[in-house]
Image (cartoon, rainbow, N blue to C red):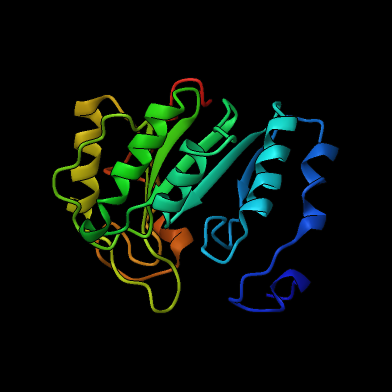
Length: 210
């Protein structure tokens, strides 16, 4: 991608020099931690995760989003270590298909142990219908389609199923984008497909997360 930080490709690489960057930003900001990686990958040392969490606690004017596909390790780290989640942390897991719904239980546990933090599901890219979902203890669900030349289509009925359950269970629903495949099932530029669902935008935020 032209960045020195990605010179090792998909090999886990630590960047301790970046830990102090949020401290230099005085305007309250949202930081998506490891947006191109997974902080809770098995090869990331717990000692380094400690430092990332310390940075978040030391800058309470910022908000930090932590998203993982390994919520089991995240739960073990947050719930059973001296490093609980703080109010300025959004803790989330990816649930892109029905077979990954078990990840929700780990996230729910984190929310129970750390009620001050915001919990969220990222259903992006959404690759299948999720069926019925228990959203108790979840504050926000983000839904979006896949992008890129090999993107798989996201069906409208899958999105509406999640939206309905969010409304029924009082959970914020955020529709991010259609991606490469539009609401009408046509493949085109993702910008042209936009982020409208039935002619409306859904950009709800969790309480206290505005």
